[in-house]
Image (cartoon, rainbow, N blue to C red; front, side, top):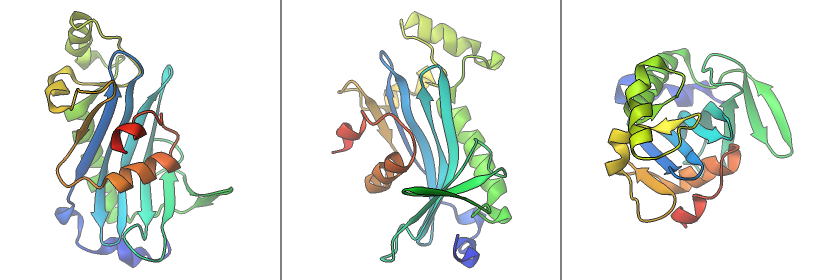
Length: 192
């Protein structure tokens, strides 16, 4: 990010986490699963979506999202917080240094692990055999990334795409992230 000092406000212990999940269990499965943490005028977090037979996932940082100067969107190339990062600015994508300070990386890694443990499962993970069985019992297809069946009651299920949003979620940020990351756009209509 332009000024690393902007990311050092508050410290990791004061991170306020917000989450959003959208899934169409009988159709495409998980179309968006994300958490984010506001850090002053900036935002950082993690996002994943089922993508055909695969899963797209990345850490992200948005500098200046809550400022009048405009936002700068950066993301990890892989699902690797400490790996390669790019800045996505149409029509150019530029390699950059990781915009999130090391002090926040450990906390973001911990938050990602907790988020996945609470909300998601992957069919190849042997400890999630009970989830695969629960999906079969509900006659739901198991995809590359799935919502834990015990969490279904937390979703608004009145539309084909079920949505869960934590209290205080910034839906404008969710829409912003969907524009910048390669996700299924169908659930965007749910937010409009």
